[in-house]
Length: 215
Image (cartoon, rainbow, N blue to C red):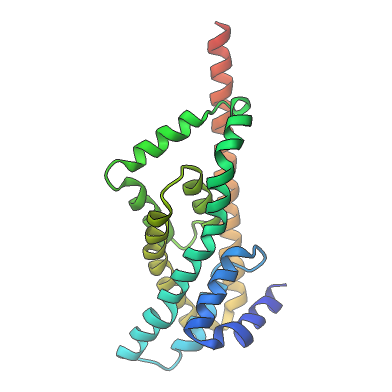
């Protein structure tokens, strides 16, 4: 599957230039089977090869990083939108079983709204290549960060992520498939850890709350 996906990106989407990078980034964000960063690795390898100096920098930033960041930010709205719309009904219906209420979510939201904590956290998470985008989008959708702030912080942070990954693809483009699979596995592993820690926290919280009620 990875072979066919990367070949499709290399031969059909990415060669369209900045538009291809943008479209590929949207697809990469929305369609789960596409390995994360496959578009950026491919674009870095195809577009930066043989360039130096100003041409290298302009191509890296304006033909790869910025279009990719815009595509990922737009694609992230899908997960963000689902979490924004369905998060509150889910918590109100099932939250008591997990020991969490919508009030708890609002407290987190209020804390992140102090100063620029929320946007700074989102920017930082987006900038780190191995942090799974889907988990980031779901969290900030759940706490209902304003979509304009979500888009701006996502775009700025992802610009850094995209620059790093494209640069790696430029240097190690001969092993694109292996790189994409390793990064995809890392993000999946981190997602599993996040889910596991969250469930453990909710279980412990719920258990302690029940003990407090019984005493």
